Length: 449
Image (tube, rainbow, N blue to C red; front, side, top):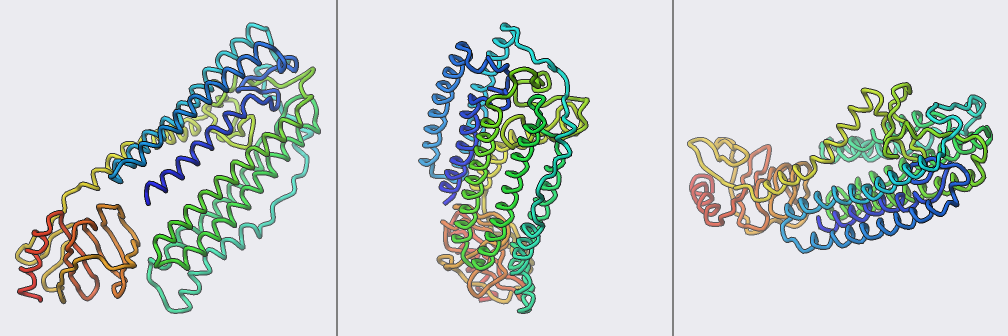
């Protein structure tokens, strides 16, 4: 199952990277490949050749990246699969952008050679008239109702007298997502106005396009999250179906995000087809490499990307440097997490007996044991409530038929398993040596069997 999860994730990453980068050769807001051009530069023969070369290079790199995911499907170990995916992920994020950065650098040099420079080059341009244009707000119901839907299963469970944390965990952990979405919705609508030239109406239209589509994205995300939580609350004892619902949520959310991003870019291109024929904004110096923003005179920590609807950090502010650095560390740390994950898969499992306890990952006092038994296989309907669930390693809190509170520490592919019942908990333990597990059971059975 993990291979299909990672494969779908890979498809989302691939499309999310390649589609916007492929779209970069379409001029929007006088910008092409992160470089601001004069109106006549759009049809320049040298620039058109560079765009063709860029797309050809991007297609080649994209082909290699797509083929590169195939070996992952042939790996047998979940840990190895995850580690390979982490390396592929870094390559899929880096290589297309290297193609972009190369094309951006060549275009920036070409612009300088042609002597193209905007009238207000290097200046921050603000359209105060457009800043006063009213924006239709998104109804609070798009956030209030989905939040209540997320909490509805918890309310029903409390009415039934069910207080088990696992049954409540889905709603408790996911309901706060929607208020967080609302916070970002309020934040987005306070960002700076998009300015291309002296046309105030155009600035207002571009800003409304961005904000309207962000509002759409937030509304879709809120309702999709509520539907996911409600579905998962009904499937608490069906881990496979819960996984399917989660995957469906991710696929639909990514598809909606890509569709809205392309819609914004298309609107920006059409609105600015005739823009910049005289005065035009040229703030390239604030955008090193075309994708990073560095302006210590701008008080905003987060700013709009110049095209599309995404946002980025202002590296000219200390907070912007911190969050960008943290994001980079988290991304670069994925392979190290995968190595740890792979180590857990092959971690030794043991069961030992001391004078007063059964000692495994958990310790069980002899005086608490009610009964012991040997399980030749795990029953159907085992559900992980909190912990690690891998093909060769289960550890943490689980639930199974007749035992809603269990602690597992075992390799599900290496039976038998030692079951220890206490008044408060059921422990299911195993080793990677079946005879070792049987021996421990026989010793305990003499005392508690």
